[in-house]
Length: 86
Image 1: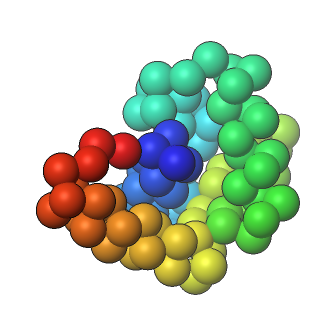
Image 2: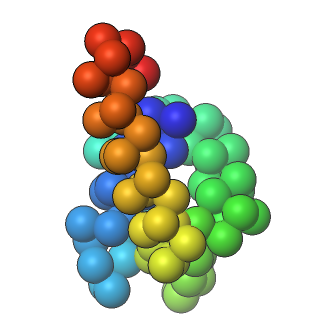
């Protein structure tokens, strides 16, 4: 859940321009194969959109992705208030 939140946060921070795979690799500190699996799941769930242009992929967060991220932040905050670490 934390990795998904990190990927969505990085994607959201990039704005409408989107974020490229290389930047996501750096920010998420994941191997390419592991990142690919996460991106496949996130696009399949409709949390991010993949835009392919000139052989390169760019990812943009969707409104559903923003909702997920907001809910995760609230949940994380509640868990912390009970002394739980996610």
